[in-house]
Length: 389
Length: 118
Image (cartoon, rainbow over all chains, first blue to last red; front, side, top):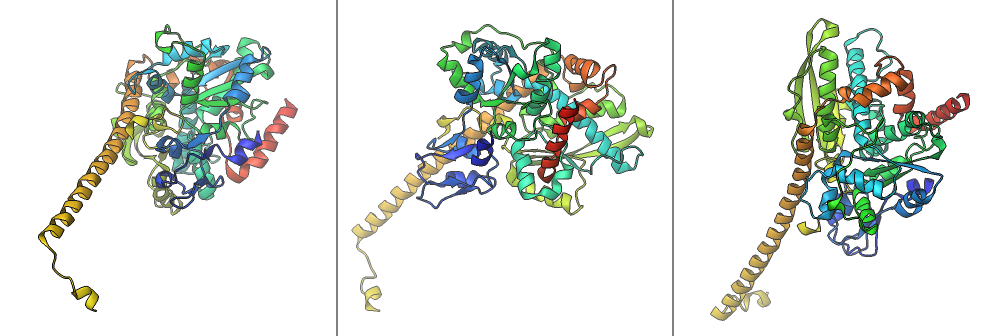
């Protein structure tokens, strides 16, 4: 398992024409090689985001595949109970591989196709995205109370709190800004939460041996492959997530199996860890985690029901966006708390925000960081749009 | 420096040849620039369409807040904090939270000890 971590997820193949386009895209300057010289990736610096891969005009950059050696092997093994989760961004891009316009929702056909491919149960990462919100949102509230000096919250970390869903961002912070790590939410990403609950809670509910469960995820992301192999994700007593495939790899599997994707009947996700909400769905777009967290934090803090759930101020594609949301806090006698939030999409733009935090100048309470410009919908594992070249 | 002063003027033909070549270069580079610009504009377009797809899906969902997900209520009620809705419960903390950077090696030891006890 450690081979993936030490070799990195992203590799430059011999098709490289040394055009230097990728070096201008890489947020960490991890791609080396002069103009005219085949490039290579410095594993130490690479955050596995795959932005170079989806933007290479020659298709010369590849990601490590777990399909043959892990996923298909597990599907063929009768002793394995193979479960699968799919990230929100997958359902609005998978259709592109089958002639649909970008943004077409194919989630019900996706569930059906996964069952045809042999997965024993089909769930949804959106369930654990909701779980991320209840955990990460509560953590934020506790950090705010700690900051305000409310007794009983001393164990919680400092403000601002950064989101922790994006494994490329987390590795970037670990590599370049270790001082900022206490600010990152301790909540695991939805993918890893799914792995942990699939081998504990789900095993209990279905009455099966957790050792026989093989947990697979479909992600719009190449860094998720790196994340699933990180050694600390063993809280269930097993490797929490066993293998990851990208949106592209799922499309290839569907085509290879000869499934006529668009004529599949709509199906639903399985019970216990498959239910979604709108809040979880928008995780796939930049600002989505923030908006989902606000919907829950507002209701928990104010004790009021939110009628208008849209926080349009956090939407958009500007690399750095900020807003202030005023929340009446019931525990403080209805005192209105202005919550300052910031959304960063593109690791290239996060340095200034971090420098402010480390210098104590930051006024923010909560900061969402997603490595890929536009969020997970533009992840390194999504269908490649060669038509744009 | 006779070499630079010898031929200062140019014939009408030479002038036309020079400007003609410049014009061709300008047109060709303009076309390439437009292709590049279109590619950039198009790449923004499909990202926005995918995001719009998610926001549309959000609006179509009957439940739009995480804490109202019935299976979330169930997992706290029956597993993470039996009998109540307690976020950040001990079990939630163990299964759903992690550590970063230099804290990872001791965190892994903690997890392994927890398994030995359990």
